[in-house]
Image (cartoon, rainbow, N blue to C red; front, side, top):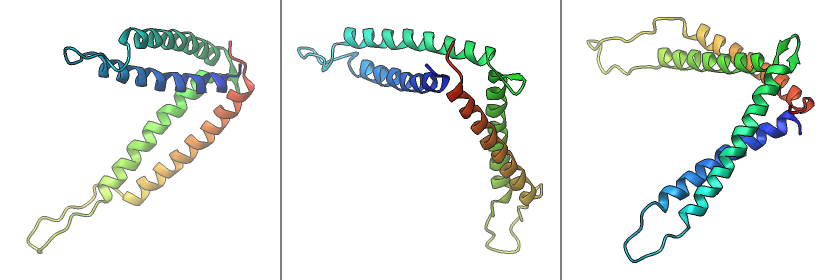
Length: 150
């Protein structure tokens, strides 16, 4: 199994676990004299199976990420860098949007709200970071399809 396939399965398992959680909660209580729409014990068993598979898969993915090298660095390091750059880009974009938001004044006597920074500069930085994230993500995705899961 390739790393990319394992990552897809992990995503599916995460979704499955959330669906099972919802179904379990929907069947946690019933009106006296009625039957649950689904057997909570069966749902719990399916949840346990999904969680067990998820644990196994995530451990293997983490092992693969730490032991696989891409351009002289562990793949996991590239993933961490990408994720943190995404957060940074998001903060820059949000900050630029907030600083650039216009507050309507209805008369000259109202307080004028102005940005504390050059908005265009921070939007440009956010765009540059987003481009860097995309390039890094492409590099990681390509590697994921070439690396076998350990």
